[in-house]
Image 1 (tube, rainbow, N blue to C red):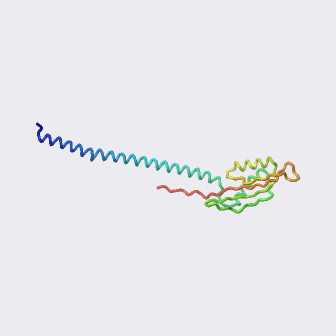
Image 2: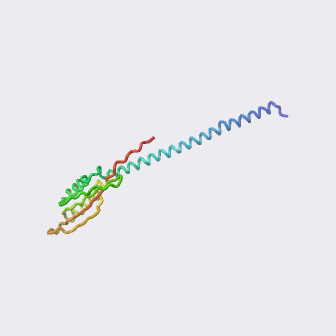
Image 3: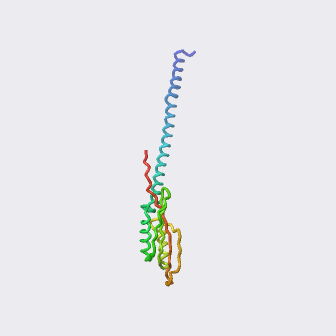
Length: 171
């Protein structure tokens, strides 16, 4: 027969094991899972912040290709500078009123000039590869009266001003 003291000892050890398992091991397992969840959430948050920062840099790079100010005279200056490098003879420059497209502003200008067909092509190529984004809205080319190798060109260009991107502060 088992002695009562031995039986009591076995029951005590079993109870201590049960209390230790539920009181220590199970709690530690739950806390470990919680920590793993927090680590995964923090990794997700950090990745999201990195993705947002990369997108903001990309947006800012695109924004730098747009005018630094919502002023049509900026567009005129830039286009005339490109045209003068090609030797274009401007006969008329007509900046159009800025059109608000919240939060953007559309700028446009209509140009008339005389140039050789080669100069027109080179000018259009320079517009396409310029540091800033320009859109050709309309282009009319006709032979210049009295000059067989010259073209009379009417060109309407536009671009869009975008205000700077505001940085989002972190936590």
